Image (cartoon, rainbow, N blue to C red; front, top):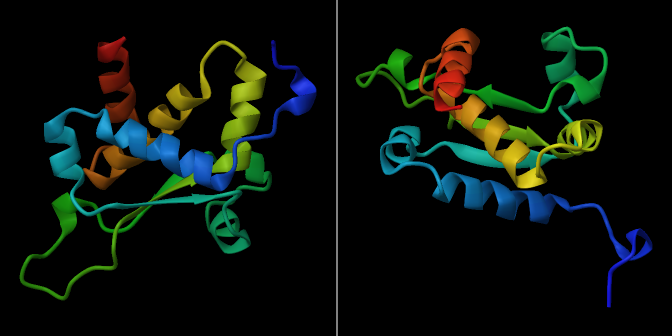
Amino acid sequence: MSQTWTDQTAPSLDDFARLAEEAFAALPDLFRQAAGDVVIRIDDFADEETLRDLEIEDPFELTGLYSGVHIGERDSMGPAPEPSRVFLYRRPILDEWCERGDVGLAEIIAHVLIHEIGHHLGLDDDQIHAIEDDAD
């Protein structure tokens, strides 16, 4: 029996968390070890304060965010920094997935996760894009 679109529901926050955990587990060991204790959090959207700070008017424009002090700037002798967090935003990711239509949801989640972990490792957007281009 085939499924119809009327019996499907959008992936929940828990579904996204599971996909993010699977994507993280599939990363090379060295990358996972370098990511260390980064916390992965799934929300529907970035909060208003974050959007305002980033000067983003449309919450659908932000699929993910790294929050914390990247590992290259941490002071091992100073006070412990706030935990590093990677935020994945469910609704903008779903929107991108629907608009693209040429890639799986798990692949987009993995892409956003890797991008934000790259920031945790101290890489800027250009460096992350160069690594992604080399991988393709």
